[in-house]
Length: 110
Ligand SMILES: [Zn+2]
Image (cartoon, rainbow, N blue to C red):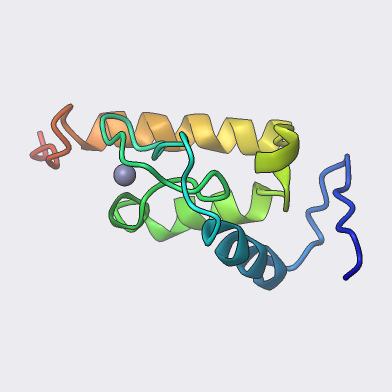
């Protein structure tokens, strides 16, 4: 089996299909000590995944697409996400804090 070489630079041209396949393969290795990035969730979640399944699908589709677009295969291994990914992760976090309470329930519209 060829050794996977992870690119050091962002590769926005990389098809999302390839990234999905990578993440699903990596997810089989389990969560380890990595937890879901949804503020307040804390469930174990494979490092290749942004969050656990139930939290992931709480995010609006455009935000999920942004995560996929900026995610680089292997960034969870090299610990070198692109600046774009870090910015999107921050944007997602802010969206969650605006739309969800600390206990994970959805905020009522003001
Ligand atoms: Zn979660």
